Image (cartoon, rainbow, N blue to C red; front, side, top):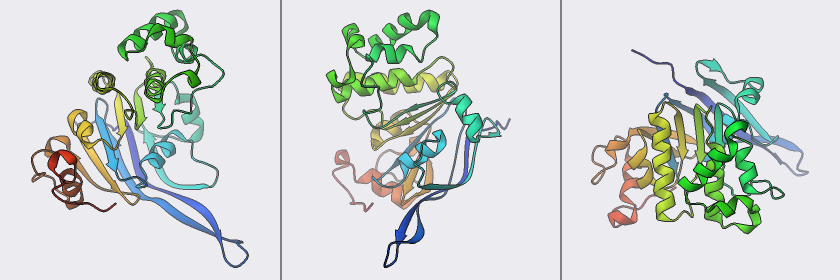
Length: 267
């Protein structure tokens, strides 16, 4: 049976207004993402990879509605078969749609991180669930009483992950959630992403870590210069990438250090 995608992005284009001309008064929209299309099904992890500047974070920000005022957006985004307009997004964001940002500067600097995590959890069990999440991500309970400036970047990433995981969540958008994590925490985060998908959530994982993406994702979308150039099965990222359909995906895979830089790849 055909299922309705949990998230459907159709012909998404994001541009930014720049002013040119002798006096700098001539507006010009410079596209950063062009004609982007992708779907995520319930229970699926779709990883999005690509070089820096390829538009991965802009995709995430467009979905959750946090692009700056200078951005021009066209195209459509559907959630659960219905257009995701700004009013509907405000109702769902933080409840059914969760976002884990790339920057560790998002936590409130004036609030202990444990309290920030508890704000996203059911009030009656917030303390218990926060303690369980901290244990899962190898955060000592004393960390809950600390402020963001007292934590390392890796610890803050784990706190952000705990903040983004809620019981009512159906779609998780995780923008580079793993840099700076020690191996045990990295494996726990990846394992939890897989568990969330196995429980029925859709996960959009934006990452530079192609090895991790291939290990836990169902499909991998490859972005280049603001476009999705191919969507490949994660099982195709093996060997020398002979079963990958797109040349750029093969070159990215073969350029990894573990493959002895078989081929270089331009952004």
